[in-house]
Amino acid sequence: MNGIEKQAAFYRGYLIDDRSLAPLTTALAAIVSLWLLVYLVSAVGGPQARHEMAERTAHASSFVSRSP
Image (cartoon, rainbow, N blue to C red; front, side, top):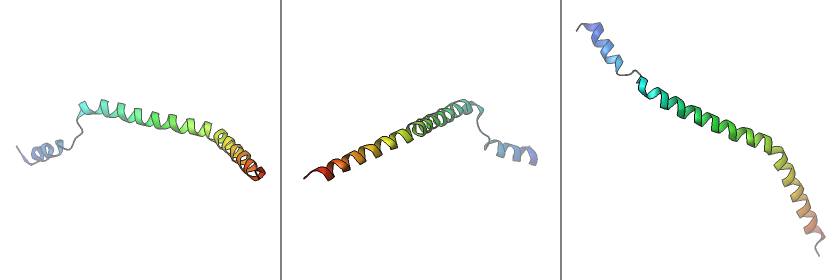
């Protein structure tokens, strides 16, 4: 084995195993899609939920101020 073959054999140890790419890609895609789903649901439901909370707070504060 000459010098170039030794170097190539050494660096082959740092290569990604092709068999592990499919599960890794699947897991990464699932994580990203789950994050995107949660983000979109919170973005769509966010303003309505904040508006309802503001109304409840205003109603509760008016109820407390009317109490003797």
